[in-house]
Length: 305
Image 1 (cartoon, rainbow, N blue to C red):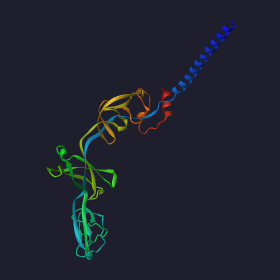
Image 2 (cartoon, helix red, strand yellow; image 1 turned 90 degrees about the vertical axis):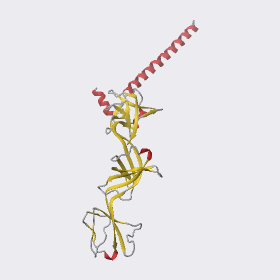
Image 3 (cartoon, one colour; image 1 turned 120 degrees about the vertical axis):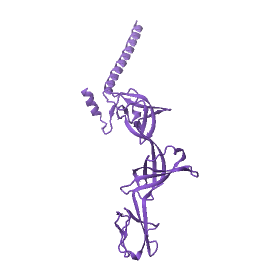
Image 4 (cartoon, one colour; image 1 turned 45 degrees about the vertical axis):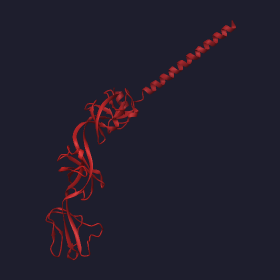
């Protein structure tokens, strides 16, 4: 009898311990569930789907050439005043004063000199100065033969030079040769660039991009695209701030944007960056460009609701 009583007591104590553990775990779980349920969703950068400029481009190089130029050979002992090099003169201005008669600018341009050394004197007795009209710059470029059918006069171009790394100069195709060069298998093409600020210097090396098939299409940041094999996806944000993985068909890439052929419409909101922080059906705190990541703001919005 005593033995059975002991066994019963052990069983009761065992079940009491199990019940205590279960109750404790439940209470702790509810505590943390309640605690973490109040934590706001992560702040994620989002963007609106809008139209962007897209194009294909042909890249090549060329040398900047002034639209007009002239040179003047002057005797050193004929000079009445110091030469003002790299100065701009208008048509009809005096370029240099000479004993034998002043040299007048036949057109507007920049006064310079020819020579490979710092000494502008070709000899002890002679000076050669130049006048370049660089308000318009031309450059002859070579286009690969396979692009010859799409090259048209008036196509827009962009040019860059190493001396202005963050600036782009705009222009257009001005002339196209009537035949392919049999040796280089290329089409000689001349481009024209407006240079009213005189920033481009004759002789500069130009990095030229010819724009083809320019169009406005829906585009998204390249940081918003998820590639899985040959398929592309974005995280589309619902009005309730729930993200949904959405398949899209993409086109060309241009200036940090990727063209969207199908799968999205204008005005849709998508995750712009921070893709590793989200997953399908997750709730986020959307942050548009220019806004600060603030959990406090989210809490205020939740309180109002």
